[in-house]
Each structure stands twice: as C-alpha cells, then as structure tokens.
Length: 302
Image (cartoon, rainbow, N blue to C red; front, side, top):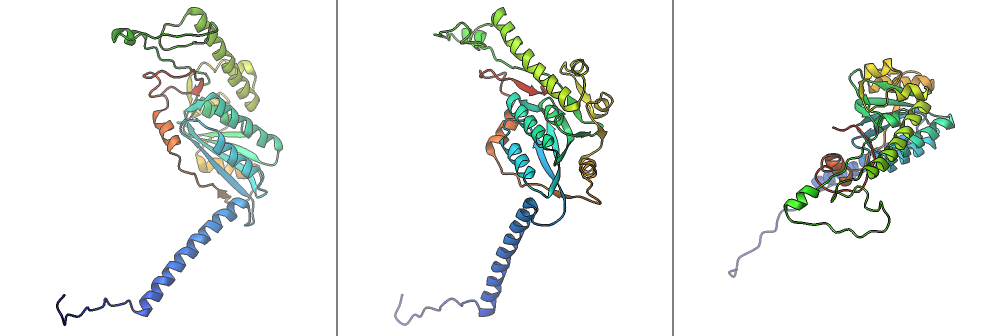
C-alpha cells in the first residue's frame, strides 16, 4: 500500500437496523418456544377439555416400540378419553404386530379409554391383527383388509451356486440346525416341521381376531385363508363395524366417550428414522434375492 493511501472503514449498520434485527431474532425464538410449549401442553393435558389422540401405524410393521410408547403415554394422560389408530399398513413381523395388539388390549381392558381403528388404503394381515384389538373398526369402502394368514419366504440358491462352481460346507450339531438353509434343497420332514410352526402362528392370529371381535373361532377360521376383502365386504362379514374415513372414525371415538361437538385431536410429532424408511422401501423386495434367517410375517404379499 502506497504512502498516503487511506483505508475507508466499512459503514456500520445504523442503530435502528441493529435493533430491528435483534427484535426479529428474539421474536423468532419466542414463537418457537411458544409452539413447543403449545405442543407439550396439548399432549400433557395442560389445556382443559377432553381430547382424542391420533396414532398412525403406517408402512411395514417392523418395530412396536414407538406405537407402544404413544399408547402408554396417552393412557397416563387424564385428558385423553379416546384413541384413534390410523392404520395404513400391509402388515409386517408377527412379533411387533402381536406386541401392539397386546398393548391395545391392555389399554382397552383398563376401561378409561375407548379405541377406534381407522383403516386407510391397506390394513391387512398384521394391520388387521392390530385393528381387531380396538373397540370399533372404521374402514373406507375401498380399503384392502383381511389377509388373515402367515407367510414365510425363503431363498434357495443351490442351483445358482452349482453353476458358478461354489460349494457350501455346513458343520452342525442337531438334525435341524441348518433348517431352511438356502444352500440345499429342503427335505419333506423339514417342510412339515416349518408348516407346523406356521399353522400354530396362524391359529394364534385366528384366536386374536375372534377374541378382539367377539366372534366365534369357526366363523373367523372360514375367512382366514389369506384372502383380502374390500372395506364394504369386510363390513358384511363383521370384520369391520362402520364405513367411513379418518374424520368419521374421530367423530365415532368422540361419541363413544361423550365428547360434545368437534373433538380436539392430539397427535405426537413423528421422529424421522432412516432405518424405518429403508425397512419400508425394501421389506419384502429383497427376500427372494438374498439368503435370510427364518422370519414369520403377518403380511400381505405385494
């Protein structure tokens, strides 16, 4: 820099501008805090009035924890008088479906809260299993439901390995330790053993539906061959109580607990889960292509 050159300082924001920016920042923080407080207050029952809680069960059912946590939280909330389960699912794992069913039955048995299932596009297999635990089921006329059955999908790559010159070597103790191995053909007695397991889990499904719907086991057994029904067909078969959409289900839940007028609906914010996203994208799509452990599913094969 040559002698005599001078540096012109950058103009500083005028005080009114700085003050306005600070006020905007403070206002933004205040609004965020207020929104958070409102959400907490609604869920915790800090604001008066009886409410209906909404729990969504969407996509393939691979984990029960989040739904069970919501059920237990609302059960302890004195302002929650009814819960609507919005089910839009083809089903999923046997165990998570059974766990949610059991928790719904516990809430229902307590007698303080009424539960209504609202069926979306699909509420089949494990999705119907859960719905059967509620006090009332509402389905759209075109909802796909039913599919009362169990499925096990196993891959066998024996012929493929032989083509590429790869041989599988298994060392085991116990006759059935490599049951359903993808590297060899299944024997007749192994297939019979697996069929026995599926039949027992299928019987559990039938018993759960009969118990939840207060129907005779034989009546459910005749429908439990894996077939699907429309919502309208399901109503004729007493698998569904009423036809309607989500709003109809919410209004029904309010009527069951004598909430007058338009009910206040509470819904928890969902946490984003990459695992859940991937599970829903790929569940049932890769099983024919890659070897996997034995897995039983209450699931509509799409």
